[in-house]
Amino acid sequence: MSSLLSEIEATFKANDDFFLLPQNIQGIDIVLMGLTSLIDISKSIEALEEKLVEKNLTKKEILMQLNNSGEKKTNIEEISSSVIEGKLLVLVKSKATVITLKPIGKKLSRSVESSENEQVLQGPLVAFTEELDTSIGILRKQLPTANLLVKNYTMGRDINRKLSLLYCKGKASQKLIRAIMDKIETSQDKEINNIQDLIKVLGMRSHSVVAPFKITELPEEAAQSLLKGKVALFLDNFPFALILPGVIWDLFILENDRNFTYPLMLAIRLLRIVAIIVSLIVPGLYVALVAVNPEVLRIELALSIAQSREGIPYPAFVEMLFMLIIMEFIIEGSIRLPKSIGPTITMVGGIIIGQAVVEAKLVSNILIIFLAAATIANSTIIGFQNAASIRLFKYIILILAAIYGVLGVLAGIFLIGAHLASIQVFGISYLSNNLKKEGAKIG
Image 1 (cartoon, rainbow, N blue to C red):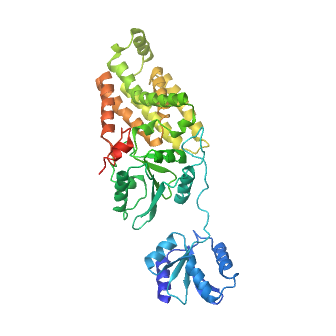
Image 2: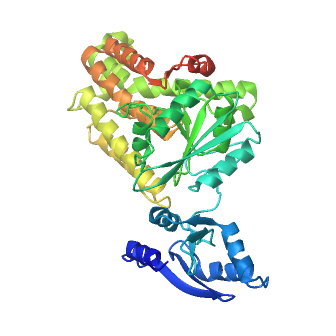
Image 3: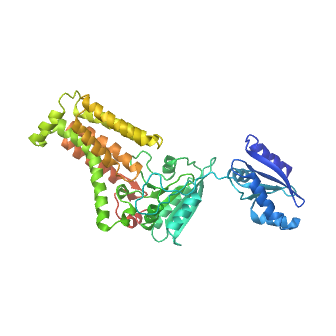
């Protein structure tokens, strides 16, 4: 016993938040151990005494009650892992084992709140949290069926992190589920500290601009995705679900749209499709029509554009690239600034910069209209990662348009389409429209 206690002390002696508290319960000498940063000591001791002392149990009954309340640990690695997880350890001096109990922990996580990054007009307002079990519970409440299955994994060798795989029995392809499980089970010793690590564990392309999965904070979106045959991954301390496989429809289709009437749903989704096209091609099309192929325009429009660009010292490509980079600064700044001042600063900054560059004859006023249309259209795309992908793709079209004109715009669209068609997530094409049919081909 003393050697085990000494070994535990030696393991955590450098941690000032580690505690050892000798206690005597009904004549039984015990030592309580844990981390003060994770455990509410006074409340945990009070709960333990209430459970054992006030019932007037005998020593034998107390020991039996302790054994039934927790798990026995004899290995120092298991004991260390339990301490780090926030368990309360009870070392009975007359025994050479440690019993782990669930203590009253300190409240370190936020309560269930509405989504911060995804706005809901008509639908459930709750969102996932950083607590993995809480997020799974929210999803179970949204999808109350016995066919919802959960598979838990512990990832990492030095830093343990929980990973949960969820799917609906009879909906998702068994070959897809087995492929994901095999990837996870063969990489359980790898650390997962971020989404890039998870992509590597799953064996997906880490250099792809397009996200291989759909990321959502909304239980309704996750639940409906599972019913469509997809699979959800929850990572501890990450307040969102990762839906596999990701497909192109994730850019402009929300399950929440079904809470509107059918014509409205179609109109909203069509609007998002048009917005993606506008965001992609408008900057490049402006450069192509102004600098390379002005003959495509009607003579009145061409003269109007030429007049607006009178005195502009830069070619159209440099002009558009300069303003696009400025807009990227504004968008990134609006994300990083505090919410209390972010919208105000970015709005004022955008107005002042836009007006100043036009008056200084650095860019034309027509370009500002094209730029605003492309930026607003990009904001309608579902998911920040999807919107960021489109923001990058438009530079490819812009460069090709500056060289080849309208033909370059078409070539850029073709290249982007070919790239999307080449993406596969566990054998399922990114452009797939039938997950069950595609999933059956895996293996």
